[in-house]
View 1: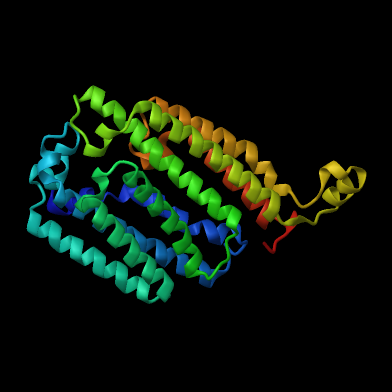
View 2 (view 1 turned 90 degrees about the horizontal axis):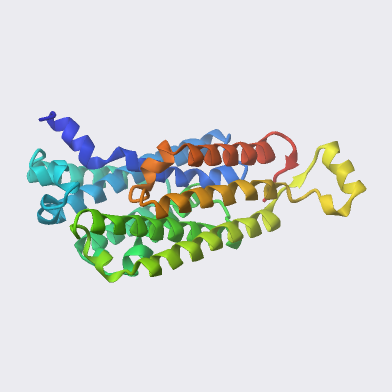
Length: 312
């Protein structure tokens, strides 16, 4: 058996912290990534949110001990297997919540309120809302939305309505994809999985994935169309003079093909049943890593390399 600290780390599931990088979205897209004070604030917000998410995972494991013990995969989790005693798990849970709230109070009140809202929502999810189909997807998606806007609140940044639509669409796409992939567990392990899945039809989740995937790339396209910074280099200015079709304030639209590819790749993985743990895919799938890397490089080039005048 692994040592107690290792069991605590496993229960905290730090691999899931990759989802908390969504807090940096506002910092990146508002052109303020290299403002030291703001970057430090968002970094602390990332730490606070990571502690909060780990607390919710431990709480969920404590609530689901009996169900996890008969689950083909979850039975090996430290709490379900007994490798991490319940009193110690509870102590760690309380400690993580307090640390998260302590850090958040040093940032601003709105961020603290979102931490409270996230914790409350996730605790209610673990207590029973996760067994309500459709509601469970909405709650998972809300968690992603809270992350993005927590990052915006920390730096007091404005994010346009088009970006809000994009965040909502992507969040619903990821949540629906998670549930769609989990359906394969019913077939593989004879139904030993969450209750809400029994109320979902495969065709319904397929339609959710398709609908939200389309909404995601369309809303991002609208964001790039309406919120792109103006180009400033002579090359773009001359090109715009030569043709009205090459207008100079739509550079962010260059990212649209990359976003479409990323969604297509993720959707393919959904229907292969590989998206039950999206955080692992984001770190391991070569296609997704290429799409994320290229998207980040393009956004950085457009907003930070001097080809445009920021001010969105």
